[in-house]
Amino acid sequence: MFEQLKFRDQNLASRIAAKIQEIAPKNDVVKICHVCGTHEWTITHYGLRSLLPPTVEVIAGPGCPVCVTPASEVDEAVVLAIKGVVVTCFGDVLRVPGSEQSLLDAKAKGADVRVVYSVLDAVRMAEKEPSKEFVFFAIGFETTAPSTAIEILRKPPKNLSFLVSHRLIPPAMELLLGIGDLHIDGFIAPGHVSTVIGLKAYEIFPKAYRMPTVVAGFEPLDVLFAIYMVLKQLREGVARLENEYVRAVSWEGNTKAQEAMYKAFDIVDGEWRGLGKLPSSAFRLKDEHAAFDAREKFRVRITRGRDLPPGCQCHLVMIGKIRPTECPLFMKICTPQKPVGACMVSMEGTCRIWAKSIR
Image (cartoon, rainbow, N blue to C red; front, top):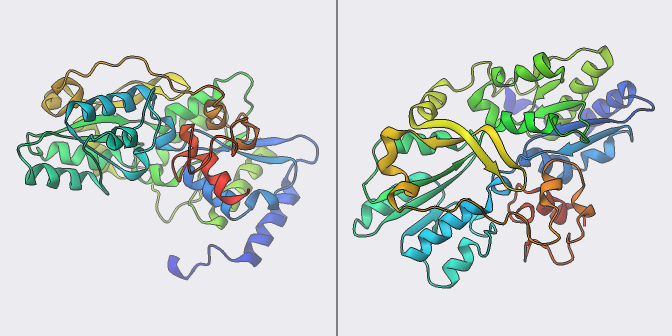
């Protein structure tokens, strides 16, 4: 049924935009925060902000997994690569800045750093080359954490270990609400993450924070509908948890994926690039899987890194406090070809999306 729906229908988009205009506040500005790099891509690529009245502002939160990975954890991967361990990672991780260098820099100096499309690729490489030590640099939110967990639970080859840097989205949303000078009127929650953790994971936001919260898909009409649903709650003076992405997200989420995550990982406090340590926001391998923990296996100990190069405003872009164009480095010395900050590296980074779409 869903394939018959036209999620990019311009006439329907115009009708929703008219409804948004109708219920939007006339004077006060409302700020709706999304927490997903793909939502930012949809909003920017399709010019959805141009359909909104000036009193409705959509800002981007820390929804890019590459952007939030702290420099200290990139440093750990670089140290391992320089030691002679084969470091495997996703393609967009390669250029993420560490304190002094990226994995791409290490590769250019001769380190064996390999791009993989999935953690299973790393498993197969380790099986084929048993004389070498392999590490999979596992970043990402609850969307990618289950695949890492499943391979750990399957007992991969002994010459493969994991540098786990997975993060959880709801704690980051709570962080945003605790920033005194950052005003948010509603959330658009990420669709991909929500397919795993389910609608229930966001229950706290309307209940405890009185914050309208809508889980949304990634097509232009999904996002426009979500904006309308948040505005409708604001107009009615209520805060609800609603699901625009009903074709993919359920109340419970993917319980098998959740089960794998919680068998493999404990939830611990975690550093976020430029944002500091967030309570209960990261996964760490459980003690019974310590044999697969690269930090323990190779005694990697880096406690502090340099998240922000001089002049970089990625930390403010990631919480929606400034637009990419307000960063003094944007498209001057920080470009998609030569990124200075993490937000310019990944396809899901707000600065890179803006650089590619609206310049």
